[in-house]
Length: 196
Image (tube, rainbow, N blue to C red):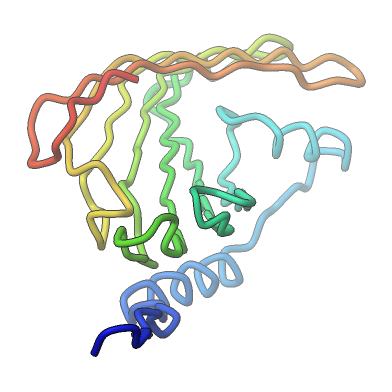
């Protein structure tokens, strides 16, 4: 009918069972994995937890809230689960695996775009790092992005790869560092190539 308004709003998107199961499994693994710090002081342990290439298994969570995004000025939520696992290759060399697993809630940011909640593209990085570094710790290696998004709005649909490097300076009172990477897409079904 002419002049009659229609309701185009959707019900809020609920997390999928796979996302809920993955988060639950991750929490159970974290609870069941004891961390031993027999010889390290609380200060040293605190420094190690801030170091992305530490010789310490850690599972940091990074919460990101993006407020007033898009023309609809909606809030986007991103939880990055970032397990870091060191593997001793030789007495002098470690392989540090650092994987970013994004879990997102993206409401409808503009009319007609839609909304989505779920898993984003997973980003594993592998650093070769000296095992006996003390004050300055560094690592280099490859980084990848895997098109694992559970919805087209949550990822770019591209396989990407490139180099990564990290450097961390651990002084008596400070932990200062930088992590840089560059990726280029080489396959996938997304609309745009990746060069980031």
